[in-house]
Image 1: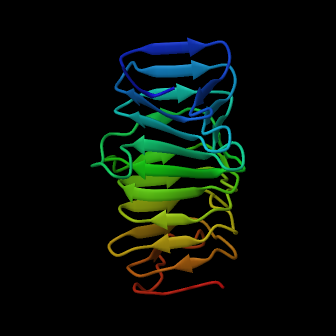
Image 2: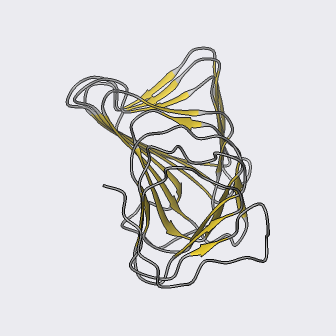
Image 3: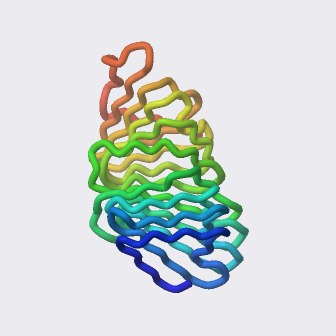
Length: 215
């Protein structure tokens, strides 16, 4: 699959879908009424050497049994909620089911303009999550083990253990990480303001300009 962009189109597949099976493929689900629905797995980057990118924006919706990113060793997969990392943020779309990072290189980018984007999916596996713009709220347990990089906007962890303890959290200048529940053994490297709101007192905040690094 090469580059495909769908606006106000409903795709219903009785099987799964591959974006970048053995080569390079991109798919953009763009706009209200634009949907991709599969009864099986939707995979971005399948075989070694493949590159697959799925972008969901402006109200587009993708519904799969599971959405797999970088399925096999040597593959590369990316999901963009909003715009790709190299572009200006736009309104987000929705991935309606869970996301699994495979044995390849997987990336999940949030680059959107929403100030209250709730992300209730479960994200698991060794991939990386990048917060590039907008406010994204995680409300579920996400046991992914890769790096969480907050490069723009805000990430709020609004549910117990919503970010796995093994995932480091890297913030850059002008960004925020807000923790609504207690997280144990989370590595946090800060180069800007950090706001933490423990469950025991939602008014309690950690002193800003704090740097914590777990080696």
